[in-house]
Each structure stands twice: as structure tokens, then as C-alpha cells.
Length: 189
Length: 207
Image (cartoon, rainbow over all chains, first blue to last red; front, side, top):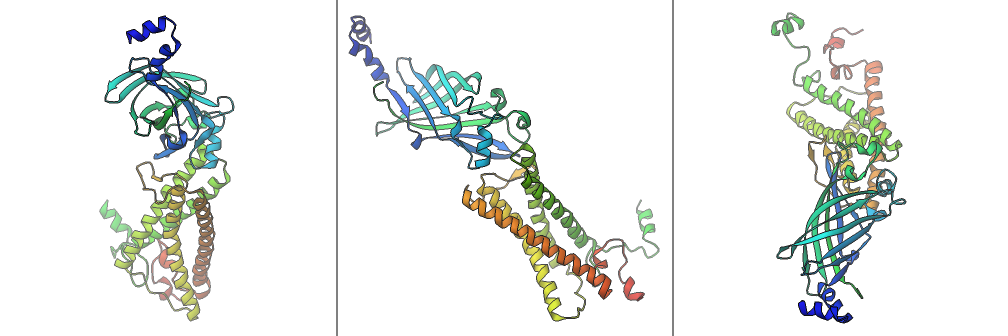
């Protein structure tokens, strides 16, 4: 590492990039991945998914990991077309005004055995809160890796479900966001 | 309290309606099943039609949640009612002018039971196919019977609605037949399913 830093100081660009190559950055493959949200409706469990997202996951053993994920909120899918339309509307994600939900990491702390805890800013609509999410990062034999974890949040904290939908007796406030994302090496990053 | 109750029933000290069915009338258990199911089915029509007319909203979510809970309740009550029917057989059907009418009465009763049992199941399937797990008044959730499937849900909704109109038609036939017995045939078929009427009145006092 020291030698790399010295080489870097000498302006050797290739050496400078080397730690990042080792850190390795990855991008999601949505076709092989799942982002599921689980809550309740009328007291019964209810699930939906997001199909479309992008991001960059840079894992660095040296502690300079970074994760950024953006979800296309219009890709919400509850298998109920009428409800999906409502979820894209102004009372929920308001996808026309805020087409992206964003997560930007601040720290990624290794917990050992492929486990990590990422802390960062989650933005839904125009509301940003800090969240802390434990996850696992598991390299696969095919050169890809899998990122898995779960995050619990309260939808009203992010103004999801306004007006009549703010009723938490019929539409649960607690939302579990479960992700299992296959990432592939990012090209040219 | 018990004394006063027995006084209300007169010197015979017999309750107004027996618990079990007798050869001349339905007992209090069978009557309660009948009239509670009548009230719940009427409520189901109101909730179903009302919800169907609404756009997606919290109001519709609540109406349909109630509709599903009540539907499951009706299913349970009909199962219990059939069990009670086995334990305490209903009074025999009175003679009707034509064997075809007797057959029609039998068939319409079978159809009523069949619809009351199958409509909740079709509704449950519809809910499962729509990715909406059914909760019984928020107390427990029913397992999903099928995976979410838009085309299946569409077909199940059509079936559920068609069955509702068929049920309405059979109910109208059922009410008409009861009134026909009461007004034209002047027998006890209607009275024996009504509380607060003494059985055998008509037989004892033919007018």
C-alpha cells in the first residue's frame, strides 16, 4: 500500500488507479436481482417490487468503500395495475416530480465474514434520512457478486402515502425493504 | 330473571321457539343461521356494489376488507348450518301441487347452499390472484390459494360477479315461493321460519 502511495506521488497514473481496481466497483444486474418491499394492507401482509435501478458499489478492503443506488420509482410493481398507478401518483412516490429514490453511502464498515454495515442517506421524494443497513457481499465463482440485506423504515417518515393513505391502520407504516442484488464488475470504472 | 322469562312464555313454561327443529317448525338455531346469513348476504351485496363503483381509495380498501371478512364468516356459518341440518333435520316439505315444483324447490335450495359456499372461495381465490392476502377482521390472515395472476384474477372477478347475480335471482325465487306458500297455498312454510309465531296456528284455525 505504501509503495502504491509513493508511486502515486510520483504521478504514475496506472499505479494510482490500482487500489480502485483492487477495490473493485460493481454495477447491479436488475434481471438477476430483486428489491422487494413488504408492508401490510387491511392487516394482511403485502409485497411489491421495484424492477429498474442503477448504482455503483465499490468495495475496498482499505476502508474506502462506497455504495450508491438509484431506484426508478415508476418501476414499482404490486401486480395490481390500478394500485401501481396510484403508487406512482402524487400521494405516494409522485414519480413525475421525483423519478428517483436515492441511497448514498457515507461509511461502509466491515463486520467480518463478508458482512458489512453501511450508513448513508436515503432520499424518497424530497425527504432524506440517515439509515444504517447491514448487508452481505458475497463474490460468486462466475465473477459476479451478490449483495443482500434488509432495511426497515416507516413510510410516513418519507411522506409516502399522503392524505387518506396516511391511515396506518389500513395501510401499514412499517415497510421492510429486502434486497438481493447481483452485481457485475463495472466496466472502465 | 329466569322466573320472569318463564312467565313470559305462559303457563306451559315452554319456550316460544324450541332450540332444535320440530316436525312443524324450524328451531331457534336453524332460524338464527337463516336470518343472520340473510343479513350478511344483503350486506355483502351493498359492500360489493359500493366498492366496485369506487376508484382505488382507502374507502374501497376498507369496504373490500370488510367484504372479504364477512364472506369468510358466511362460509363458516353455512358449514355450521349444514352440520346442524344433519344433527337436527328440518321439518318435511309440505305437499305442493306438482312434482316439478317439488323438484324445483329442492334444486333451488341446493343452489342456494352451493352459491353461499362457493362464492367466498371464488372471492378468496380472486384476492389471492390479485396479490391481496385476505385478513379476517385483522385478526388472522388466510393463506394465499394461488400465485398472483392478472388474467386469472380478471376471470375470477367476472365469475364472482356472475354468481352474485345468480344468487340474487335464486333469492328472489326463494322469497316468491315463500310468499306463494303463505298467500296462495295458505300453509306454514313461511311461518315456520319466522320467530314470534306459534306453529300449528293455521292448522288449528283454518280460515
